[in-house]
Length: 139
Image (cartoon, rainbow, N blue to C red; front, side, top):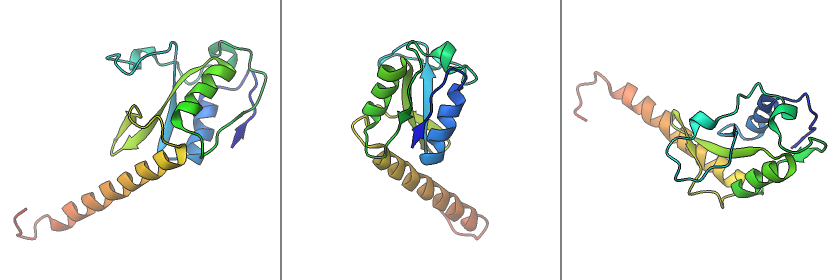
């Protein structure tokens, strides 16, 4: 997937294109780099309505491509090196978005598949719980 970068493109446009390819993953943008040990990163989020021209620390003059075979770390580094954007990939876990701290070395494909399997398991578990309600059985 290749995204044509121009100065009027908004961060949400990158997020949307990324989510179309990887529905159980998302990219969040921050106004500074941070380490995995920082207690709260949400206060450093950049509004996704922000244009690339306003958010990027480098001139947005090229396309950016995301491949299912690149690692999470490579994806984040590419955004930082090509556009000067501080980004992190998150995966869906139930109803939560989890920062992929322990899976930075995984490919986007592997992380997407892992998150998708977790979503299927969660749906199946919920269906079993609903089906067992009121049937007189002890859990």
